[in-house]
Image 1 (cartoon, helix red, strand yellow):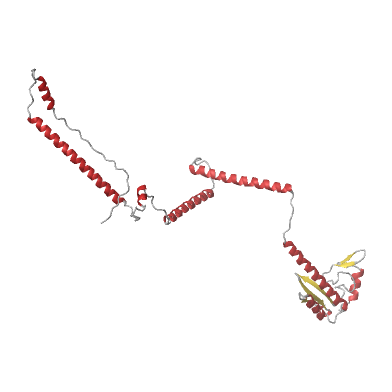
Image 2 (tube, rainbow, N blue to C red):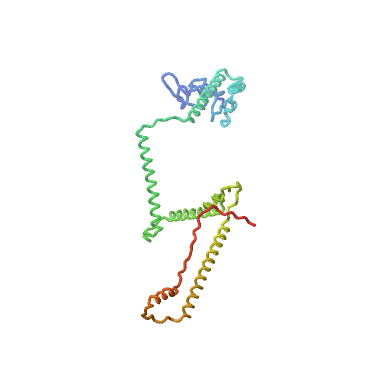
Length: 329
């Protein structure tokens, strides 16, 4: 049968409507397809077979239109047209689609579109403000309480780590023996740390072996330092090497030894001659008491026995003087 809009409105208005909200001054409609939100004959979506409205879905506006030709197809009752984000373009789309419709519906659709755009702009502004950092003041008591809690937590954490290290060291030394059972994870962690330390030491040793260093020259003695000074003639002479100094010392020692040996040999020859003379001469007879006793005593004194001579070793101390100049052939 044909849909009678007047009959529908009469039933809804006089009896009961589930979308109607009554107040002292006005009656409002909760139907989502209502164009104005007011309960009256022109704005009711149920009592008008030809009807249009604007709806917003996820920030996008759509134009919904209903005609009497699709009233027997509830699944295809509303035609949905997506509107542009540009305000002027969207208004032109509404005018084109509602060209032969009543002026009331066309005007209310445009007004609803403008209102929806306004609250979308406000939503974007609120979202941008929410991103900004807000300075919030905290009471002093709360701040002090939080600081004390942080300090206590830090002390507790340090204490726990210290206790864990001490227990691991004692267990490693075998203080407790097999009395307690500790976590295997702690042992593995300690072993891993020790292996890492050993690897680092090996790497450092390997790196130290290939390093190059620049050092200053060896320190020279005072004699060599004096040799660097220019001579009186103004010519520089190269300093004597250590080998030349050693050769000079050896030559001087050899000369001293030879001179000492020659002196010792001469002393031995003189001693040998004196001994031979004493062996050849017979022993003198015992002295007799005569008048010429004084002469005999003088004779004895004139020929005393030859005593062995003492060996004298002469040591010469050389004073430090200017270094000798040598010319190599």
